[in-house]
Length: 359
Image (cartoon, rainbow, N blue to C red):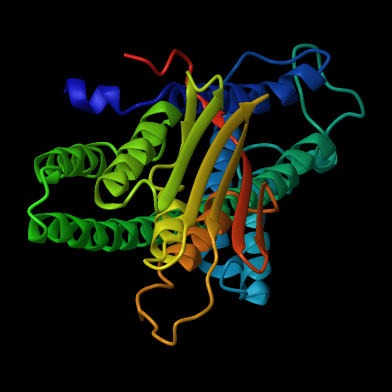
């Protein structure tokens, strides 16, 4: 029972109250229009109840089954016919065919304490027509909002599914490359192998337990990049490859989509390191006025003639994610290539947590 009551929202209760108050007002209008209304009788309540029945019959049956299916001729015929039936008892009474009233012999002025009309009251006809118009308009408007809400929900679900798929592409690609790096260290019997495995475990913990969220603290994402670059340092010769990682600005409280930056860094190490030439990789992160400025620079070498079919996963992936997460030009991604350098500049607006992201 408590479960059923909890499902009744305030909006639903308010809606019922508004409807009841509206129909009470409708029933009171004829009496308010009369200068000397008679005592309230049962038949005085029947017309408002009948109009209310017509309102909801049109709202729940005629509009969805006829109007919404574009059967306009049948709809207007049914709606007008039902409205005539609503006023049929009143018309019969006024014609002297129902009850004991003969309107042709009524005096020109109503007797004291009485209320009658020599013709159907215009106010009553107006109430019926308004009930028709309002119920039709409300139903059509509600159908439109429901359709838009369903369309938006479907779009959100498709976006979520596509983002989840794109994110799933990042993790196996990165894991594949990292395991290759550790294998190289183990093959060389390097003393850095245990530390590399520890770094990998920290990376995997982030990927498995934190990256499922829609957004993560920027501090954690930066720590993830730092661990990745430290792992790369273990396998590379510091005299042959210069690696630079700098962070500036207030990161505390800032949020970012997880695994969004790593493809840029991963590609820098994949394509910017040569075994025969001095190589340089620089990653700079700057946070200013709620915006992230992210730059990756790496050495560029002439093509060797070999091509890795998986080498294109990272950048197309991150471009697609950026288009989904930051539509309508809410991010800037610039790619610059020179004879010996490849530069990527990414600027995007950060979200912020309501409290500090630390701890």
